[in-house]
Length: 136
Image 1 (cartoon, helix red, strand yellow):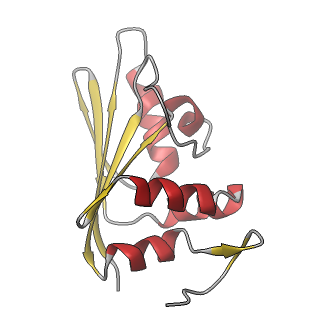
Image 2 (cartoon, helix red, strand yellow):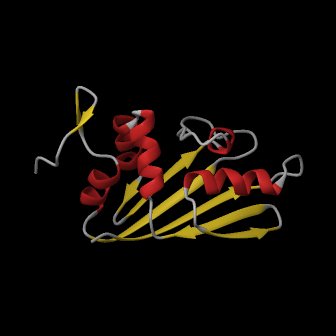
Image 3 (tube, one colour):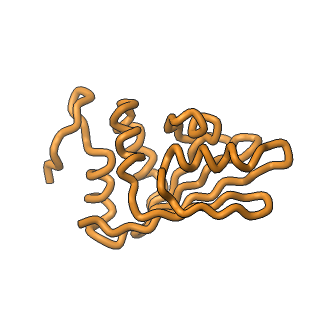
């Protein structure tokens, strides 16, 4: 049983259409509770099943694992995602300098089991590009 709290936040600039940012977030985490605020879209969910499917379909599990473990602090994992890619239904991790219009910030708090086990669940280790069972 996995118990997580997921928060997403994305800035909405004056030159952007709020509903496009909402669509981008919904493409990553369908069914999330979305809140529109001036200059920002926020969302909450308790499942990353669809997000995991995208990682598998795009065959970017190793990249995802690297990003998840790169900014892990205790039971919280943070990653940044490109808004335009998300609008197209694609996961693209934002690395380096932030996008001029801002990125979607994804924050995952893992309550149970452990962060490592949860990451292994949504982005399992691979061998020659094929997901393998947790070897621990």
